[in-house]
Amino acid sequence: MEISGYLRKITARSGETALFLRLCSKTVQKGAVVKMNKRSLGSDKEQLAAEFLEKQGYYIRERNFRCRQGEIDIIAQDGRYLVFVEVKYRADGRSGEPEEAVTAGKQRTIRRVAEYYLHRYRFSENTPCRFDVVGIKGEEIRITKNAF
Image (cartoon, rainbow, N blue to C red; front, side, top):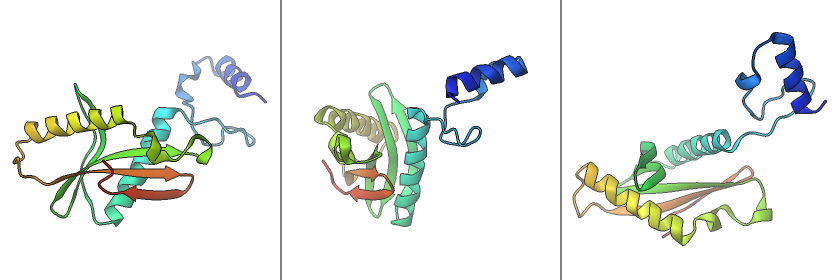
């Protein structure tokens, strides 16, 4: 059965809106799988990346730090380094490697947000910082330290 038809059937049967049925990767009925929406998928992959980093010895300070300049997925401590981490996911290699998606423009944004973070929390000018990228392709997780 088509998913949209299935949602209409539930709505008609229960009299409630189908808004509660967020698109996710869980099985809805009889093997019908709904595609996960991008925000939910991104959050899941960022959680996976954070767990991976913790296993590598990183201490996670912040997740999804936002300010006027933009957003950084993960801010962590790796030894003496304050690390700003961008997480990129690709289901497969058809649209390139995940790390390739961190464009020059995205790098500028991450740098600006990092500068704001350092200023806001009064870190010393001498605080050693690094920009890492966690690339997730399918089930494979890779970290590129000092990516830019």
